[in-house]
Image (tube, rainbow, N blue to C red; front, side, top):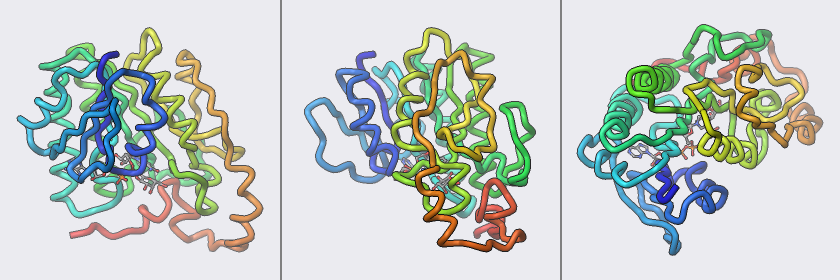
Length: 263
Ligand code: NAI
Ligand code: 15L
């Protein structure tokens, strides 16, 4: 690759990608609607609203791969979700169709399936059960990827990320946590494996109680290295007797499943 595009580069995962993926291409093109601080010599900055079709076309031109972190990243009102996550995904795939071919790593979310109970184990073929408008928008993104794969051969890793933070923050994340290291070894693998296709991949570390089965993507050769186990005692002690009816105890999507529709 000569130029790797990272969208959402002002955000948490996009910022981390600047370190973790810097060696994948001589130029990282970093984009966000927000300001991106302190560009390095190997980085070019493009401020871009994903809802702006012409701007997204310009953004994608000249790139050889995309890690798509940009967009609304939690439950929100419909209008911002429509702009960034629905119109934005249409704009992104239309730009890739015109300017590609190039691979996409799409940051989907466990909130596409958040209304499955925590007692269920899921594989990549499970029925979607979004837990809010945000989850619906990520399901739309996954389907856009599939459409552009079958119609045009554009390969996308549809990564259903669990909870990607520096460490697990609560009991639910003992199951859903994805370390930064595992996130980026996965992204790297998806961008470099000879044949990717358009798989759903559960973005989760090697946690003792993970709910998600990645055996369908063993061909990627990706093995998560980290586990939430070192934080178990601390997180269980902080919340020793959780009410089983609490949304974050009952549903895989946690608290999002208990939220109202925001207007
Ligand atoms: P974040 O909220 O820190 O970063 C998202 C970035 O997208 C922000 O910098 C924001 O300014 C930008 N953005 C929002 N609307 C935009 C628009 N209209 N045009 C251009 N840029 C826009 O989120 P984070 O945690 O870094 O997540 C990155 C991606 O991964 C998001 O798409 C999120 O939905 C997804 N994800 C993250 C998970 C996590 O645990 N961190 C879990 C599941 C999915
Ligand atoms: C997500 O999709 C969000 O982007 C992130 O902030 C967390 O809420 C994560 O899911 C989660 O479910 O823990």
